[in-house]
Image (cartoon, rainbow, N blue to C red; front, side):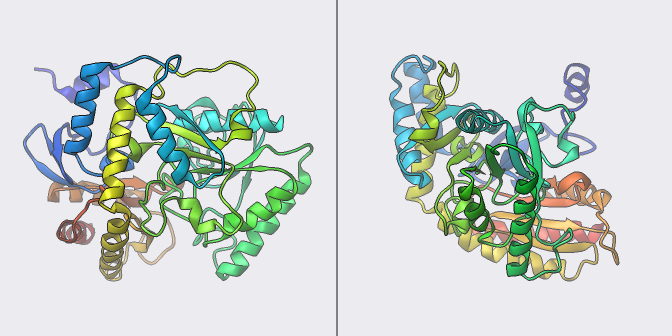
Length: 427
């Protein structure tokens, strides 16, 4: 009998990566746990790439999906759609963007495409500023602004991209500076780049905390300082909140709020957690920018009644149960626990993060050299111990990513820390 893995390899592209030497098939989940086809139970510290935001099989979301599917599954944006309007109203209010408009897509990648379309159309420029070590999706336009060669399979591009320093605090030419000096140096770099461009740059796109890049981030206030420079030239700020949104960082509902001194972004992209596994992405922008497109546009699947019903139920649960506060409390305990563990492991260079968005960067002991082999080995050892993790960290992929559902309990955080400690010491 042919295994599912063999069948996968026979029909799925080689570049669709699978975790683990012996890939697992996840068949069902509940709360913060999932089970594979062999009946093994795992504590999920990655949530389907930061997507299962509240809990697996959350009854409120399951009920909303089932009830809506029993009424109508699809109609498109050509008709009025009550769940879409309800979710858009709530997101517009939560976004912090004045006079906001919301456009729904099916993924974060498509949200990036939409944001680029809005910015370049509004500014009549195809020049985009992006951050080094960034990731914004897998489409042709998204990979063209991705500052990470492992996730950018072509050098061809529909836009002209200029890369700015600042997304990585503890590596690179400014790593040894104080936070204030770091911001000053990055602002000088931005001004230098703008001094070399001809015509108006459309926008800066940035993840407040870089996801695929290994949960790296600048000091608070960097993007506020950038905003002062951008505003002088009318350049838009796009905040990619696909991974940082919905309270995952604990301290803030959106990642941009750590850089809020000069106001909210002009455009905000979101996806992942809002659907709790359903395919929802989207863009929030001021009415002036969102309505500036001068051609017709629709979305066949963006704003689907079923996914929107899931989003409304999921967001309601998140807010009513203060999962942002839980991320702050439980995440704070977990990161301190992991830092204590890392202090005793020579391969651990840094434990960083906020809320329930935590990373452990691994190096070859006694050096500052990335160690992707160790990251893979720890990933395997953790799985054997009953814990699912993620990986990331620039082109070296030497960082373990921890991003469980935001309802994680203190006991589950400790359970995961014990397994992770054993996995790190085994390697």
